[in-house]
Length: 84
Image (cartoon, rainbow, N blue to C red; front, top):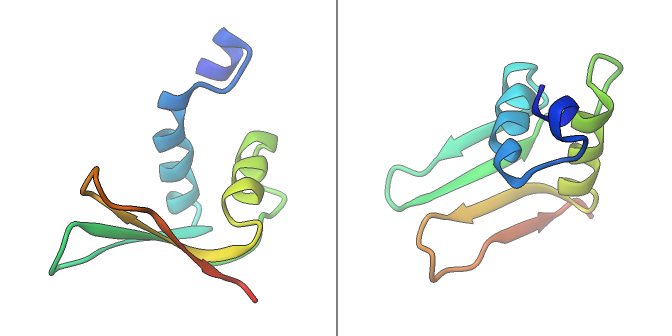
């Protein structure tokens, strides 16, 4: 809805797109029990039931990786695990 209102993708919309992809079982979020990291893991490639924006986000996020490890510590880096 926000895309229709603003006409473009806004940063605050990223979490909404990610949650939609989790609900549709395209990605999985795993939270570490020992530290403040979480992982976004690709479960399957973009399908026909995704909106163009969701498919584009998946393409952008997982173009060369299948897993993104995000550290909750603002001073740490985000890591990407290669698909190859």
